[in-house]
Image 1 (cartoon, helix red, strand yellow):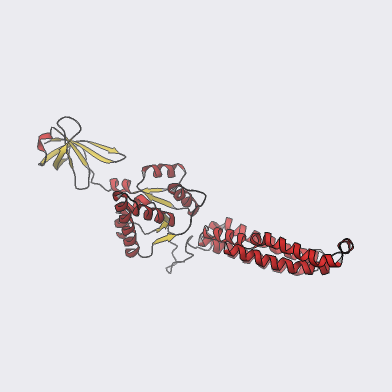
Image 2 (cartoon, one colour):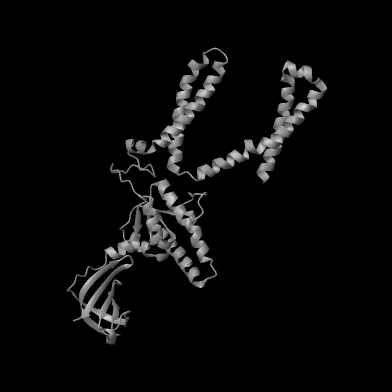
Length: 350
């Protein structure tokens, strides 16, 4: 890479200059072993070679690692770490004067060592105890905002998966005001949606584009509660696993329609909000003995059964209604069955 080449050139020049300086300040033993003429070219050339080799390891490689680490760390953790660093360096500055009065070489070494130690301790302690610090200062975990009415209203982070966005019902749930928490959509979910929208399969492409359209609609209609995050988990490749790891990292909940993701997340202790379960919960409650009007639209799996649906999508299986297809009839509910797929009613003709 271009940056690595520049780092090697700068390392070559810098270490070569250092070689000239070292030649002038070289110990007596080296002067006795190597003549002055040899030292004038041996040390600079050795320094240049060494600088060319280690240049990227002292500049670009640490910079990339730091940039990657910062990109994977949430903003509030970076801020609290910076506060800890400032506190640690302040303590080190207060200790620098008494340490500098010690005999040499302690007076030269201890102040620098104390600064490094206090800075590291400040960052480590504040980040590890950040939850307690947020409570002490009555701050929200994600935004450091104190409400103007002096009421702390800590919001929960909610992560959306791909199936929820494509499904589309989450858009109506959020815009209706039932969810006011922070909705977070990871960048890798957005990338998966785009990949689906670019699929050669017509059905997948249609679903992907629908998800992108709904996401755009959601961003426009909500009041800044939907955000896209670049936080990622590079070591995890599978999207659902990335979502679970990120939920653990942010202490967030996952909104999904995916049954398997739901179960895996629950096993790992991640709170899950399943829209299908919500839809079942708000369906009309029907009890055995109630009379309903149902239009029979198809045959059932058993002999002489007819199948119809209520307005909320609940399936009604009616005995002896095979000859009533495309007709509205009154039925008496005999049994209510709740399954993972939803609620099902069994009935007889009135």
